[in-house]
Length: 116
Image (tube, rainbow, N blue to C red; front, side):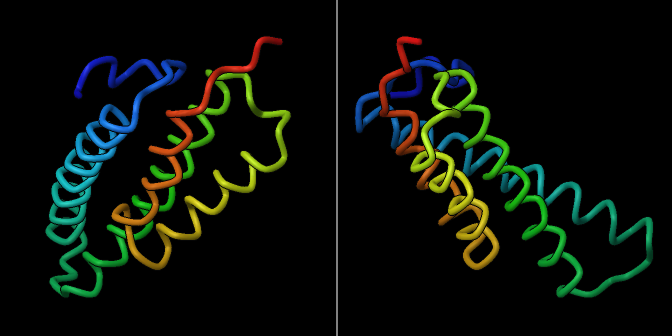
């Protein structure tokens, strides 16, 4: 379930894609928490809203980045539908954080690589 987590060109089963989703969700939560807390201390902006904004920015960048990295490794950047799905990943992350943003990325890991 948690094998080949850093191999973005690997074609996963549904169970492995769920493991990928969980592992990267936990990773983003840890990174967002540490970065948001650090920025709040450094900037002395002790508001919960600031932490949420930092978390959303990280979620959008991370979800989109992972999705496009998967497309690059699988050589699927020529497929317009998959590019739209990667962009949807960032849009979903904007509204629901990485809970929604990583769903398209997990789906993209189940697709086979292009033979080109």
